[in-house]
Image 1 (cartoon, helix red, strand yellow):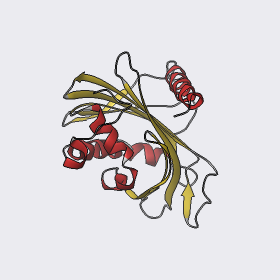
Image 2 (cartoon, one colour):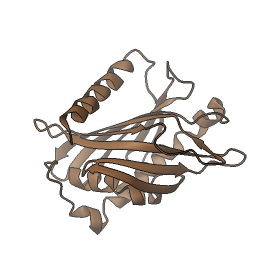
Image 3 (cartoon, rainbow, N blue to C red):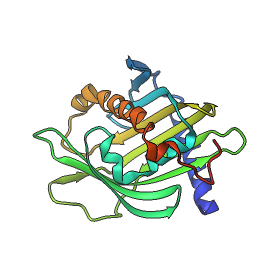
Image 4 (cartoon, rainbow, N blue to C red):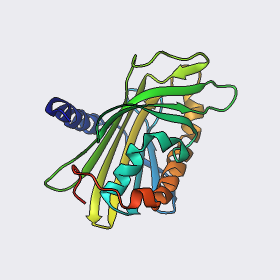
Length: 216
């Protein structure tokens, strides 16, 4: 990964964290199977910001392996119809395309995401930044392109067999979906995704994963 992009990732993460300090407090919406989902109103967008907190068994490299396997993201991320790698800048820096299923009468959504995985070598905290990229691919007929999505994972090792995840996301799905309707059902998506992720971590293709840029 180029140094310039590394600093861009760090700066974006810090700005994301700073920008939410003045916002309303988080409200716990779901607490089940060790997965907590919170929401709060956003000052910048009409759609609620979401946060997930959980602890999983496994190593940091296992989680990175699942997350970076973007071609199989549709198998665990809630209501994802399609996920496809577009370009790999480096092992921990990828562009990918994803399409999200929306219930009738709304049109499906899609977006291009740049996802980067980095680790603080001092405390071993792993950060995953996933942000939508506009104008990377032509838009498709009858699918609404998501113009803004910003997700930050903060993954803190508890020991070499457990880690804690804090996941925050802000997204604007575009025209046609009323904010009140999306906010009403938004909690279930992150919960189901992280429940699926918990099972994915146990699969053999991920359980033995190792990366040179991640210290477990």
